[in-house]
Amino acid sequence: MMPKRYQIKQVVQFTEQTTVPKEQSENPLFDIVQEEIKDNSAYCQELVNKLFRLPYAQLPEFFAHHCNYVADPIKWLNKFEKLIAENEELFVSSTNRSRMIKCYTIIESKRKEIEFTGYKHTLAKIPMQYVNAECEKRYFSFKETKQKVEELKDYTDKIMFLTKEKFDYEQASIDFINPKLPDYSNQCQKEIDQIQHLNRLTNEFSVEQMNKNKNGMPFNKLKINCNINQLVDIFYQLHRELFTDGKPIIDGNINDFVAVIVNSFTDKDGRELNPETVKTMLTPSKTDKRPKPHKRIDIDKML
Image 1: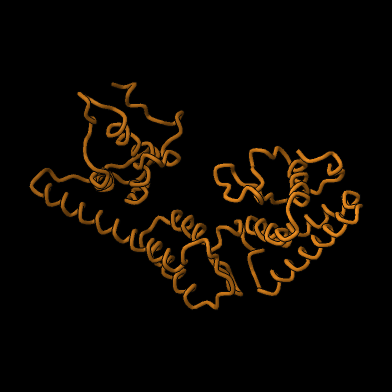
Image 2: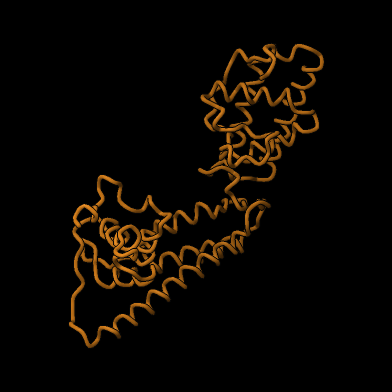
């Protein structure tokens, strides 16, 4: 708890807060723990607390540390500068006044550094900690790229998008590289390799299944008139949640389930199902991809 004489009287509305969840905090000296900040006022108070607690020599690193957590570091610095100005009475002593001047100097220096290096991260929608690199025209964030890939349904679109990202990065004149993140080009290539591998496996399983069934009864794919994840969840329940004599009601590996589903069903518009989407829904940790409880077709109640 800070002494009462450092209690702020004015707050500034921060559009971005640089708090981190307790379990993700790696620098307790600089970090502001999310669980301890209930509102903007508490955040402002803790920022000022940090200014008085930290040694002079660590103040520049403190500002740099927090700039890495915001999408618009210049705007955040401006807000912090205003917070100090609104509470200048806390710095009335000669010692604290020199601390205030040092903070102003650091903020101005940091602003110039960001502008001089040509960072375009002010245009980003994600915190700096997720930006792999930046060039004059754009930033590269694999976290963002991965999200876009997952939104694409077509295999070819995924590969084309990742390949373009990889080439754009390799041909760009990079101004900044985040040392805490892997190389952007390598991440794109690994994602391409994984998608191609999964697609190849799915095709192999499909051919194998067709060969097994070529002497069986011919059939057309069945159309799903419910949500795709509701049907996939039925298979998930029969494989992961419902048992007979200690064994799953339907046993097999996840690739077999994917092959059976994509080779047997189409969506309500008659379109093919995406193997990767189906596999994601069947992955135990991806609970958010399966139906919400009130939309789930509960097989256990039917048995």
